[in-house]
Length: 235
Image 1 (cartoon, rainbow, N blue to C red):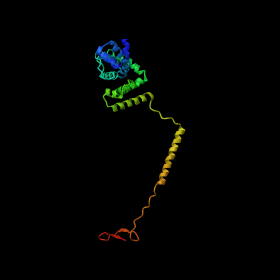
Image 2 (cartoon, one colour):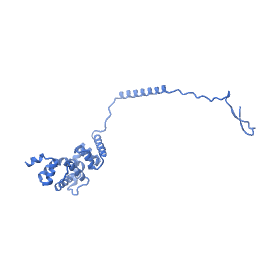
Image 3 (cartoon, rainbow, N blue to C red):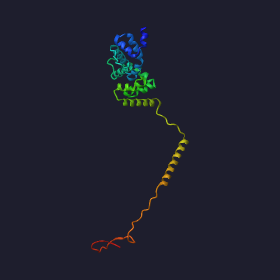
Image 4 (cartoon, one colour):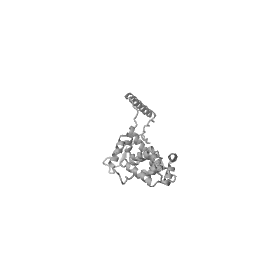
């Protein structure tokens, strides 16, 4: 009967009961609800120390359960786990074996391998919003960045994944005959535009020579060398 009642309780009610009574059945219900999705997130963010990090995370939850203060348990769990992953745990049993097992699993999946190529911050935002189903505002709060920056990083992460999995968008295929027809049509349009521009061009008026008051233009010639003042005479 006690177990059936636990299944019907919300996450927040379970945490409240565990905070007050520390009953192991209550913790077990919380653990079963979130262990798999938290482990998947942790494995993709820190495969080299995922197991040790999760053990430390759940131990801390047991020792000091949170007082949510109207906060959703799901948001609290991911906020705390994401912040704890920024530094590896102090005690790690066998880091090489731990990294090897998860590394092999990640390498065997094209999707997981593509996610690993994302920068850490971009990968975290992509996982929190896309896989963990958190809001963009919560992801921005976890990374402590503005909402606009978070949205930009998410979009860049999605484009990176699209290119990594499907390649860049392909242009529609065209035959050589189609390309030739398009080139001829483009050349014809260019000729028509050039002809239209020549037809619309205004004729350039002929430049007229200056008109003098006398019948012929003055002929300027130097005076003879014999002149003392080398003046210029008008003939």
